[in-house]
Each structure stands twice: as C-alpha cells, then as structure tokens.
Image (cartoon, rainbow, N blue to C red; front, side):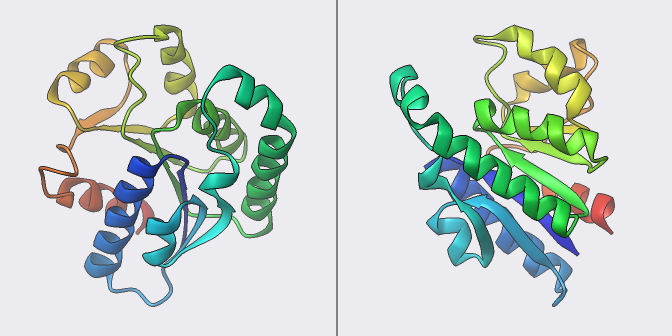
Length: 180
C-alpha cells in the first residue's frame, strides 16, 4: 500500500515522521510505502522524498515569487509520481499554500485526502474553508476548539490531540480504517 505524505515545514516533517513510524508499528506491513514531499525527519522514518521539503519551503512573498518556477517544477514532479503509481490515500500536513493546491489535484484524481494539522483558518484566511470542504475528505485537528470550527462549516473533522502532548493512536486508527 502506498501513502502520499506532504509536509513542507520542519514541524510538519517531525509530525509526519512520528505518524509514519506509528503506522509502520501498528500495521506491521512490509508492503507499506510512504513517499512525497518530506524533510529529513520523514526520510529517516523511511518516507521516500520524491520532493525534498527544502526545495519548496520559502518564507516571504518575494522569496516565493523568486522561487516560483522551482516550486512549480517540484509540485509537478510530485504529481507525476502520483500519476505513475497511485497512492491509496494522501496525508497532507499543514503547509497550506502548497497542500491546498495539492488537495485540489488529488481530488481530481479521486485520491482520498486526509489533512493533518489544520491551517489556522480560524485566525486568518477563512475563505479557504471552501477549498477544504471541496477537496479534503477528512480534517484531523490538534486543538479541541478547531473541531467545533470545522463542524460549524460542514467539514468532516476529528480531534486527535497535539502530537507533542498526545498519543497519535486516534489518527493511526482512522488511517488504518481508510487505507485498509
């Protein structure tokens, strides 16, 4: 089973690595393969870095504009790998500017999308809720108040706790059921 992972920031990379290890331990499946946009932590957890996080993670509007051709090239490389060998499910972690675009492309390809670590829509850019409603199959949140926010907007959501403070077992249970 192939699982697409996408985390472009250091914190998402750390949480993604934690999730990859938890899924490997829980499922004990030698055929379980992880690939996608990842940094060194996910790579150390045996996630194939089809795209390296450092190649797309830039801060600031001018930096994004300056590196846009490279980011677009890496985005297309990731989609090419998705099209070459379709994943059973995608887990997108935070990094909303990249991951919401990716969610749209995965939706077109009918690949289930789980979004782990919600973009902070409740604080800014609330208009993105429409994208999430359309392209994300399940929103997994780490703060209790986020669950009510997404429920209010009609998004399938589940609170699992913060990866630094809580056991990621609820998320692993959900992914196991979806991918199995």
